[in-house]
Image (tube, rainbow, N blue to C red; front, side, top):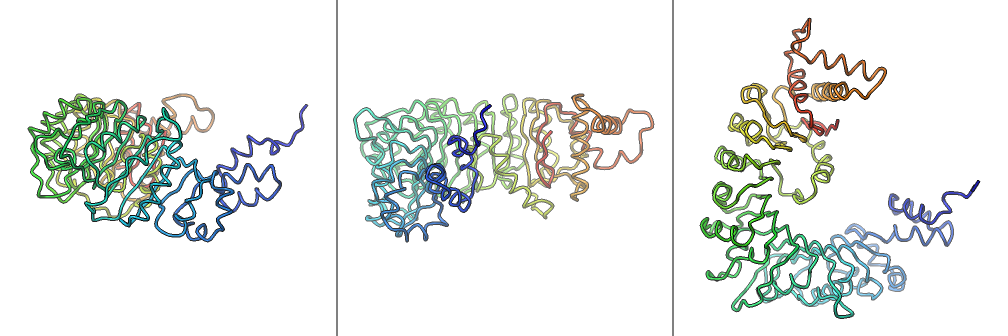
Length: 483
């Protein structure tokens, strides 16, 4: 029998290092040389903005020795750290995020850093402090793979804010980044006096850009919109960033149909312009599966326009401007759990109060609905009962309920829901099964000896939740429960 200490296994140490704080990793790295090699990667793996001052003071020889271990740099700004990162050893970054001023010297250093790591980078966030300087052009060459011809870029996410580029350069950039899946180019000024390089990206599916930039990026009317470059686009995050732009719904509908007929998800942020979202939903897009808007936008007009997609819609979600819309659903729920808990039981402005009844049209008529997340809306169970939800595929529900206004009431409700789910599955034993069975009987209004207190809000909501066999994630104002 092998009695080898498991901590002598290098693979195990490397896995454990991923879960340690910097302080613990440093302590482990000092045990011996073999441990040092495994735990140093954890120490240097991610450089956060909060550590910039300390790292900027390090001797260049230390950066030269350990720079090859750095994989992630978040929030890089101008300063000594940017200078230190010019060392040739910093060449294996996977994710780089930086916010710079429009000073040419700093931009040159940024381009050098990007170019040196372009073979390994999968995520790049490069922003310039606004306002846009129309004399500063993004250096597309910094994304060109090297050192040998035939190499390809590994970038899957690219964000460029506050710079200019010609339309041909934009097309060439897409051509260079063959693996690109998501591009965010808000506040990027495109110019196209001559537009000849009409590359269409085969893999890009996610676009973040306001409507002005999409349909009038270069202020030349007879040029095709940038949608031309994205024939396989499925997710579009957009808004209107100025009230001066005149939105042409006819042109929008024509170009979407011609260039990107596969759009399935629309995420609409709130901007200063009056964005005609309802027209876009009714006339510009077809068969959407996901619609996400800010709470202030979800008016009766928008609700009715959403119903034009009732045969395909699977997700309706209200979002804040800080949400990362394009995460997977499970990642979105996990990342928002802390946010939801921090806002638990607080007074939240309900922008949907006047649409409390009409909002019920969505779960009652969208038969394929799987996620219904309206965290700022307080539903009335009388409205819910009146409209009768028909979405039997519902899996995720995030709402507040009128009169379900204390942590105890919410937890009691969700515990009954969890117990009821367990009883229906019939895969629990002993005490849990007994409690779950009793809970299910108690929630059944047709059971013998139906107690009068079942008219309480907790029982009404729990009975409603148990109607949906596929429901697995619920938030009612405290924390996310799963069953």
